[in-house]
Amino acid sequence: MALFNKVTKAAISPPPGKAAAAGTNYMGPNTNNTGAGMVGMYYNYQEGEARNAAMSVPTVSRARDLIASVIGCMPLQMYKEMWNGETMEKIPEAPRTWLRKIDPSVPNNFILSWTFDDLFHFGRAFWYVTSRSKTDGYPASFTRLPAAMVNTLDQAGPVWFAPSKQIEFSGGQLDPNDVIQFLSPIQGITSMSTQSVATALKLEAARYRNASSAIPAGILKQTGGEPLNAQELADLASAFNAARMTNQTAALNEYLSYTETSTSPDKMLLIDSAEFQAMEMARLCNVPPYLVGVSVGSYSYQSSSESRADLWTFGARAYADCIASTLSQNNVLPNGTYVEFDVENYLMGDYSENNEMSQPERDDALPSQS
Image 1 (cartoon, one colour):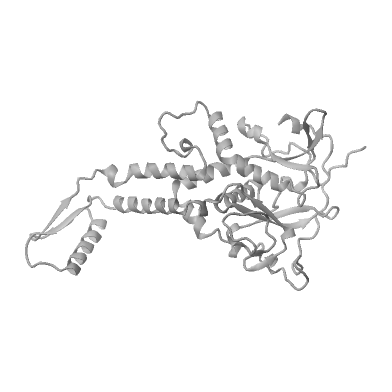
Image 2 (cartoon, rainbow, N blue to C red):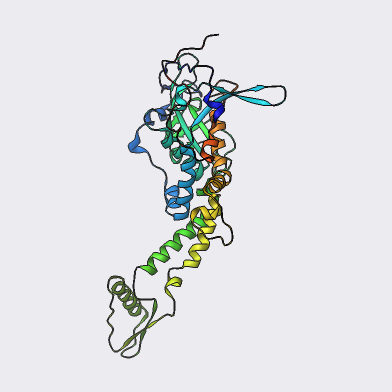
């Protein structure tokens, strides 16, 4: 944005203070902060079985990756608001150092994309404050906490009503003053439509089962010999199934016959059912179906710019606004200072400045002269 390329004040980056200390807690001196000791113990981190199951559905995975690419590619920028007599005008503000280095150990693209991932699947996300400014006490760096490992004792979910005051991470308590809590306006998909996800998984299992053999499904019938009991018939069918799973040719004696069904290959692969279920998953993920490869008949777009606008409007905006609004709260920035994503460059397809510092942001920047 052209407005943010002209900054009148140099960035003052106060030296970071010590990381949030373990052993103290807002609940009193007798309550420990043992959860802080588990922060950064990556061998213990996990994303949760419900999230991994949802991501095994191709449409969900595609929708997640599309929106994550939007959230991760847009740089953050700071501003203040001033009344110009008619409207509130945005005044660009020199950014704090963490705006381009949220977690010094990983790129912003990574932490923002996975913050969205938590919002998308669980309806909330968490950052832990790892250091604070010595001059004003505001956060100077963060690290992401996997939402699947965070438990809130005062809210059971899956709908979240406000930031929690009783937070546990990996079984230990955390001081909520050191945790930035992102609450999505959209309920997480792992709890919003569990039956749809389970149906998609069962459908994929059925397609895999039908595709794993070149011999069509059918009926195995005994035509002669001594009648077989139920158990013997079940064993015979199981053995025949095992053979047809590994061989192109099946062998039968004179007392057995195999009648193929008239099912065509497209029906065996449940293509129509898969198409319908993909549409359901697109609805669940709040993305236009054509963006995830689902045919929608006459609906089409004319250009890549229109598809980017659709993805932003229908899929990514709610999550981007959640992240920006949370980072604009007074527990992160001084009152009257705000954060937003540079949406215009994304919508115009201009990514040239995403990895460049379009605003002053150096630790050795000189303070402005008044």
